[in-house]
Length: 121
Image (cartoon, rainbow, N blue to C red):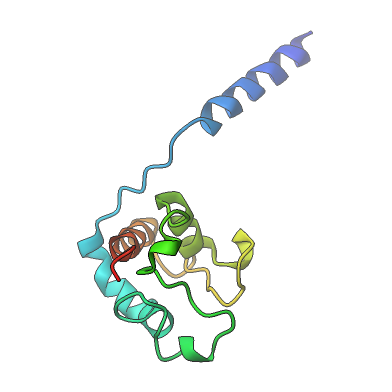
């Protein structure tokens, strides 16, 4: 009985966390420097996927400025892609995981900057 009660408590706690809404809490202005350092070569200065290294990639880097991509570019999605990379999220392994290179607040700032570029064609 004690084991059953413990398992029920663990499941209830997990359900509570699963219902939490992701909050990015990033500052786009603070993300520009890291975006320029790590992302421009593929995604381009404007975020249109036309960076110098991006030309050689298949598939092409995501064009953040294309309105067709706006719906999928949520706060949580962009953060997970920047942090964990494409392969971990079922996307292109060409998208590098930056989680071991940047601190969490830097990942959040870069993600906020990417979101600022969203749909600005």
